[in-house]
Image (cartoon, rainbow, N blue to C red; front, side, top):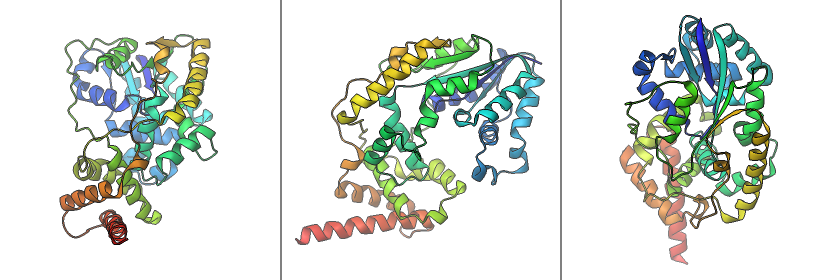
Length: 360
């Protein structure tokens, strides 16, 4: 029987990749200090998919992956110290599934704790759109912001970013003090501050553990992100599969797309700042009224003042064509799969438009 089990449920785009990279890199050291990450990293994703009910993804699972939640629960039960389970897909689970998962964990440890990490919406929105594009979305950045603002029925954003609702969902039935909110610090804070904040919640000593990034940064600039969105538009929907998405995120983006254009981050347009600030203030007010254990300053969940800059919608045809040519040269001359063919089609479209413009 474990002493404590911590379930880190997200939110998405709140430094989860940074934290998970460090947790898994230092897994052996953390185990020696009393904190177990059971199974493998993929098992935690599979477990979240099973709990959440991600049917299309679960259908692609191996028998071992279909048993991931059960295996993690049993490994937790067999560990005498503390245990950490982590995946941001847990956050978007139906209420009955969350309750069932918490009940399973209650049978494995003396205490069950839920950890939520949260970041200000001004930084989350651009990052979330980019992530959606990596997953195959075709929606323009400006359209994405408009649908989030109006909270349209088909908009999934708030299911992953309504922090008060996620905390309420996952803390239902937990004793006071066992639902923890870790606030992602302001951009000018030391890089390791989020790592130290979560370590304080987990009660684990991380002294001497390296926090330098070792994975290549696959964050996209505005030209790269818009190019990928246009590739998605040309890719037949019938060919979009979990396997293709894994290829895009794991190979195409880091090996072919990143660096194909000068690095230029994109901003939240100033015209969207007022409603983002209003929504953020409401979230902070809800959290202040709650009884959660908050680590960090809730005011860091308010967006910074708007800054000048471009967005992916501002990428020019010339910039996109140059980037597409660079990616095609990295992939080879002839397209070898549907993704390459879609990229080549985008390049052809851009070239045709460029020739048409110059002929006028």
